[in-house]
Amino acid sequence: MREMRLSRGLRHSLSGAAAALALTAAAVAPTPPPIRAAGETATRTAAWLPQPRPAYPGGPRAPLNRWLAAGERASQTLPRAHPRVLFIGDSITQWWGYWGRATWNRVFAPLGAYDDGVVGDTTSNVLARIEAGQLPPPGAAPPVVVLLIGTNDIGAGQPPSSVARGIEAVVAALQRDLPRSRIVVLGVLPRGVPGSGDRAAVAAVNAMLRGDRAPGLTYLDLAATLLRPDGSFRPGTMRPDLLHPAAGGYAGMAGPILAAVEEDLRGR
Image (cartoon, rainbow, N blue to C red; front, side):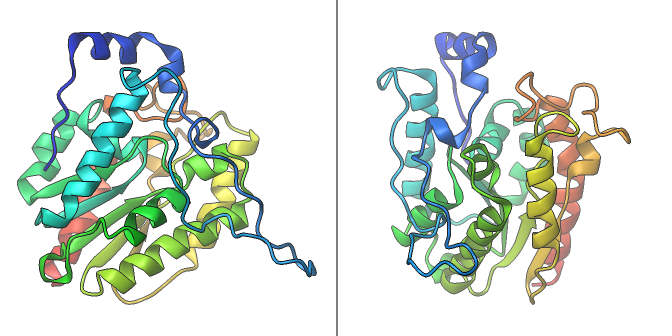
């Protein structure tokens, strides 16, 4: 398990600066060209091909660059780790170590969990990590991998079909490199306000993911832990950016994730 330790200045910056909370892939990764449309003859680069990860503005001491550096260090260390449960994702995953720390320490740390979230990552960034060999070796493969990725692809303007293909490409890469690991794919979390384009895109991506069924693969939609029946967020579940979970959101998501993880661990 990796536990994040923040300086007082960084803690103040993250809690007081709205810009530090409004993360989208547009601020981190260049928007790749869209996938080939139906009937299009020209070959174009798929949005989910591995891409490098540029830094945020402001230099190495900028809060988001500190998170980025911490996430990269954790990913580079992962091949030498022996987690039983591996969480892979973007800032929503990485911030189990901040906004969700109490829940992480109580629920997932005792399982031998490892947080491999990197702020701002897209599906293509996660693919780049995998292609770079930043996974445990087969002999030390985690029994369960929990994957949450795709919201930054939506933030970068990728169409739902491309986002779903990106998530499927990550799953395929994990199945290739960690063939004995069971994979829990979390649906993209709701973002923004009811009726917004972001909400529609999330719903479309998750509808595509729900159709994926394979041995050792579980799909889990956590929207009900965050939303009221009218589609608004439950009090205390989200940060003001309506993108990142607050402490209450992490606490609510933990139960369903734990149930899925424990079922997979029993199935080993």
